[in-house]
Image 1 (cartoon, rainbow, N blue to C red):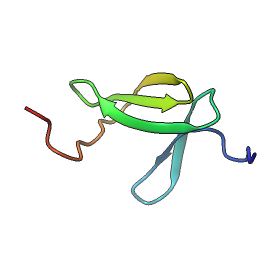
Image 2 (image 1 turned 30 degrees about the vertical axis):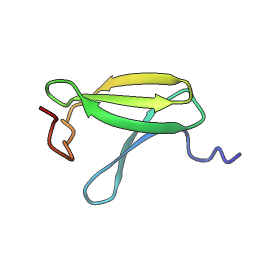
Image 3 (image 1 turned 45 degrees about the vertical axis):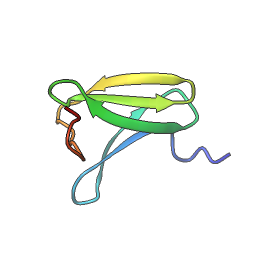
Amino acid sequence: QDTSNPAGVYVISPEGELRGIIKVPEDMVTNCCFGGSDLKTLYITAGKTIWQVRTKVAGSVLWPKAE
């Protein structure tokens, strides 16, 4: 198993620079999405766990919300 890249969500700038890593205590992140009324809550699934992290910047909606 390669452990040179810790499990987590890698925050990348529009220029492609690594801004940070939101680490999780699991082997692998399986999915993530933004939620909450302001889209500043990041939900992360990893292993058998679900994490939520407040972010400084709002996420994006990739398709219209269901009505």
